[in-house]
Length: 65
Image (tube, rainbow, N blue to C red; front, side, top):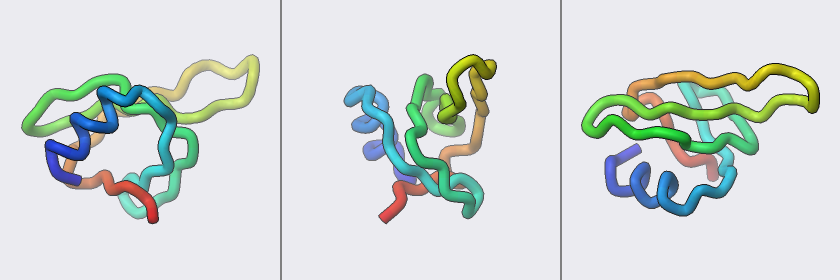
């Protein structure tokens, strides 16, 4: 993913479907950007489970088709 797309998705603040290291994650929310380099992503969880937050290099994340 490029920095411009990451910034746009971060500003929209809506859940999206991402490919992170080739794995599909639906309902992911970009909660932080450290350009150029890393993004913080909040992954979808079930009600009552703790939040799953990951920090990933931006080049390993793509917007799912």
